[in-house]
Length: 196
Image 1 (tube, rainbow, N blue to C red):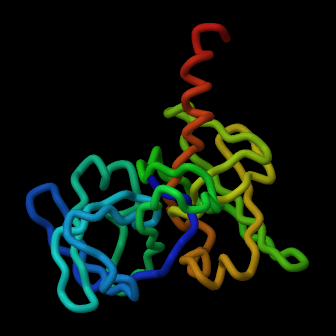
Image 2 (cartoon, rainbow, N blue to C red):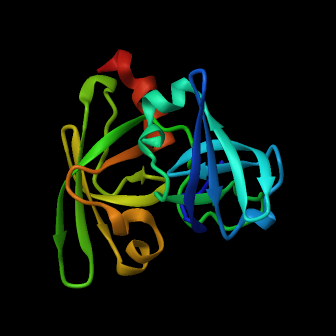
């Protein structure tokens, strides 16, 4: 379980294919605080630490993860948003994030405003995921509030601090990002499907 508040950015050091799996080596300022078997969200994807070497650690993404996220698009040198799982008894500063990416989206516009930046994303409607204005969404592991919701499209407003401390600072139009829709919204949608 995560909050969507990014702790640090890591750098991809190596990518090794093994069958349909991808082993990912990450250099990170939080590596010294990690332990083997610990869960860490990478761009919002929950992966398990399997090896630790000095400032670097290794996680493995399976085919299901590669098919549903942008993890397979990472390259050596890519910046990745990192968050360790939350501790019970801590403040929940973002929203409840499972680290289970629902699908990817594409950045379709980036507009500077007075003090913030608006990012718009479109996503494939085949999974029937939905957003609502003022609802929560996780983009590359970052907990955000939807400011404009349309069918298969939404916008978020990002403050300069978030841009500086996440990989939002590398986004360009056409960037592929991971989405995790609000877990409460997903359950409500499922419960009401038979009544609509």
